[in-house]
Amino acid sequence: MGDCIFCRIVQQELPAAVVYEDGEMLCFKDINPSAPVHLLLIPKTHFDSLAHAQAQHGALLGRMMLKVPQIARENGLAAGFKTLINTGKGGGQEVFHLHIHILGTPA
Ligand code: 5GP
Ligand code: ZN
Image 1: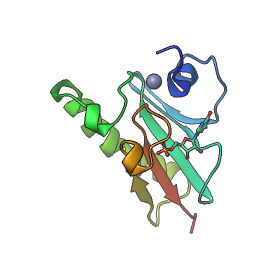
Image 2: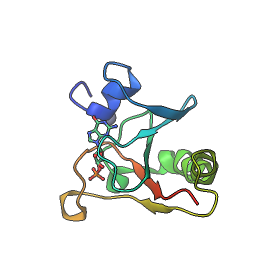
Image 3: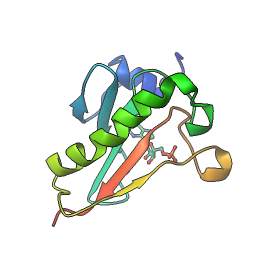
Image 4: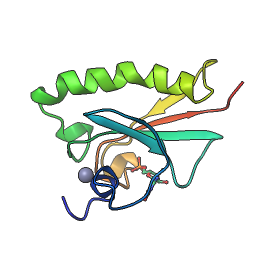
């Protein structure tokens, strides 16, 4: 996926302010934040959107969801946060590599 900007961030071909990384996911600051804390959590493996997720992605998606509160806490959002997944052009998706927005204001 050479033209996917999020794959290029995973490959360290583009810079990003990374706040969490493990073998299968990466979380970094949104370049155009809509909240004081605005993070994007992505799988390192490319799939376009939630609508493109396959059965074999189920466990990974579950681990990503379980990681969200930890990342939120570590970034000042222990009091709470919003999550958002835009899916498809009709859902406002602009970058076609699945990502979970994590948004909030530190208490
Ligand atoms: P979407 O509308 O696809 O759900 O959200 C894409 C998000 O990616 C937007 O909030 C946008 O600001 C962010 N974004 C787009 N390009 C880059 C980039 O090169 N680096 C980072 N860190 N965020 C990006
Ligand atoms: Zn990608």
